[in-house]
Amino acid sequence: MVTRVKQRMVISRLLQALPILVLATFIVFCLMQLIPGDVAVTLAGENASVERIAEIRQAYGLDQPFFVQYGQWLWQAASGDLGTALLSGEPVAQTIARTFPNTLLVAVYATLLSIVIGVPLGILAATRSGSKLDGGIMGAASLGVALPNFWFGMILVLFFALTLRWFPATGFVSPFEDFSQALWYATLPALALCTNGIAEVARQLRSSLVEIQSSQHVRTLHAKGLSPARILWLHGLKNVSVNLLTVVGLLFNKILAATVVVEAVFAIPGIGSSIVNAVLQGDFPVVQGAVLAMVVTVIVVNLLTDLLCTLLDPRINAS
Image (cartoon, rainbow, N blue to C red):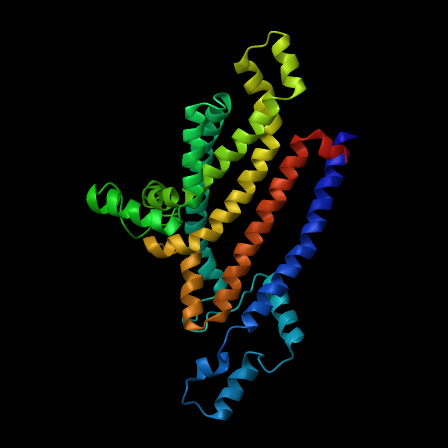
């Protein structure tokens, strides 16, 4: 019975994600129409004749009504064809396949660092609630939230790359070519991205654990003679796991969006750099495809987070 409930829940969540995905594609397509400039003029050149511009507009379907263009683009995108880059002539799907793994590696690396460093800090602050150590950790967390990623990235480059020469200042290696080298190149960008993540994880975990420690349930466990460590690991962390998972899911999406700026600082050939370059050059098929890839990733991460939370918490299953 429980299995059927979970199966229905998974199918229901997948069906709910479909209209969100379609709406996201529509918003992406609309935003691309708002970019100033005429694509046909860009392709033909400023000195091209009116006949040549009209010919290009017809060839790319730009003379069709808005919803016809959107329908054709959506149909092609659903079949994996995101068009061709206007300037390089490379298929957009190939551009995404070449650059997106670099971005994902940095984003996943930063998220893992946020968890590995943020969780112990959150537990330490919660178990020393009200102490100077708690105040110090929360103060550092507030500072971490306020620090801009690009500014911290430049500080890391100045100290660890240019002064100590422990890490490269710029460049990248594809994880498919040499994974250990890719991690080495991704370390400073991931550290620049994880400052906000460490702070968010530590603050949220500390707040949830302090709330649970003051609950009647935990006071009863203390009265029964259970050690504070046992209560923390077997009851406290178990109860906050769903909240922590939700925070990590939102954090990954935030880090993924922030890679656009950090990739520019470290000259990483990721999808964020592709978007920036395509916007500057007016290459709208690349912008559409890259933004759509990031939107789909965010939707998939939210869906997985939702499913894991539902599977972890029996009360959500019951509802």
